[in-house]
Image (cartoon, rainbow, N blue to C red; front, side, top):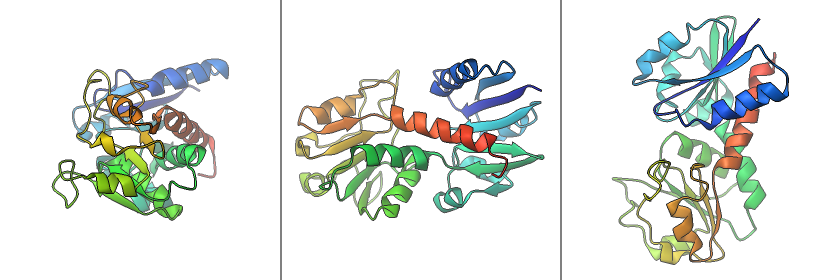
Length: 243
């Protein structure tokens, strides 16, 4: 019997996930597996998507990671804590939500982190930022959140905060293709060779934010490895009968 999977979001025609899983199915000789994109204008359209025959799992992306919660029957423990879902599993007419961004970001952070990277700045406070906070708390890494209309926003951020926090995590979609010249406002002059910059954007591979931070010696990483890891975790969940 055919199995269908897909990505739900807004403006997802450029989707990494469709290419990734289509190639994965080809390599695994799964000719009856298909991955599609579902570009919807409102989360209300989610009710139509879940009626698609043979649907076994979905990935959820911006801007619906939190809005989708009300449509689900249950949540994994990390999804409950984070309050955001990017993977949905279908089983016996029930929908369960998971957050594999946690897995992907943790893998990325552990791959690049050094001992001197002992505190962080999180830029943005959306669904992806929730997963980042979860991982930082798990590893005992204190952090400050930079967001609009808060004590520390993009306009009030100073060199002092940059100097004191050697991990900088850019969680907003700013700078994503096709708006590759855009960047959140940031005092890049505060970056040094001791800084680790993780931009969760993966397209382009080197964002405007990364290029600006790199000029001052910061080690810069994009979101591609995180995306690969969270995709593999999604596949594991969809195929685990115990989940």
